[in-house]
Image 1 (cartoon, helix red, strand yellow):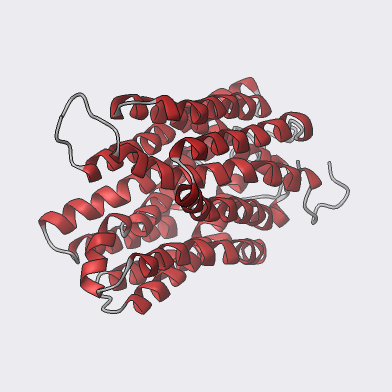
Image 2: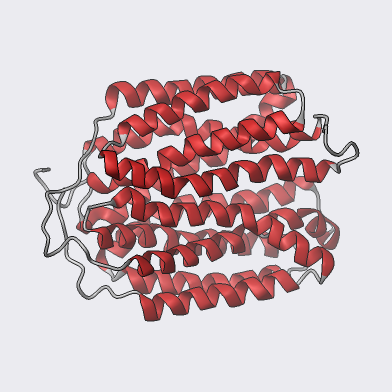
Length: 397
């Protein structure tokens, strides 16, 4: 047990720093993979559109990641081991990065992306559990905010670095650099990150909530992510409607990441002082309004401003929501319970572009924004009526 319940355990900073290199590699791959997939041959459909190739390679990772997290979370809790899941996941991740230059077809690339999604799915519940064990309820929002900010920073600059690499070199060099970065994280985790353990069981305080409440939180984070990623498949439409260039569109995309990073820790600290539930509901309500606005922007500056606001609203939801979910576990079965939420988050990232592309392509540009905003508001109502925080008690790792 730490000496001061209101301070952040030093191991949290070590864990967060160790992961920076892996998150940087993940951000680079987010940029590399769609472009690389577009160059590959397809054995099944000879004349597959380039955008579909990129979509398949991108979605394969997200779907595998989403489906594997609940299974890996339960296994981690059952074995009461977390660090081992990180080590094994990063070993596989490293090997796959080094294998990408040798893929010659979309099918082989997609298979590697599925395996990589499963490997990362093994690490996410374990990491969340470790962050949980390294913080008390009084500073949990701040702890999750610090971890998420460092992760988001590395992930956010990954695409910029990847673009620079392609400007002066090749995909092969980029993949090898990604493999090296993940290897650095693997070494740091192996030698400097310590295994964590849940607090001693106290039967009267362990089961703070039913499984239903975790699914309510999962629905909320899923819809938030759909509302945020919905614009990705609509970037070509925005370019035409707003008569703007790729650079300004990239600013709109990165504006969300930057504002989210800046506000995650402050929102986490605020949620340690104000009831987390009401911060979450406020963020959801604001995001619903922003999503509607995204369908009616007429200038690129408006799109950038709305994306900045969307990053702030997401920070107001994600960090307090994760802290609330952890509080509800009482520190036990954290991996399996939190994986319900993290897998929903990954699923939302994969669903958003598809949702937006289909509705905007076959109905109207504004339709996906209207439907998404309604669903976001419904998720907020579910939290209002279905999440009960009165009986939550602080527990100390």
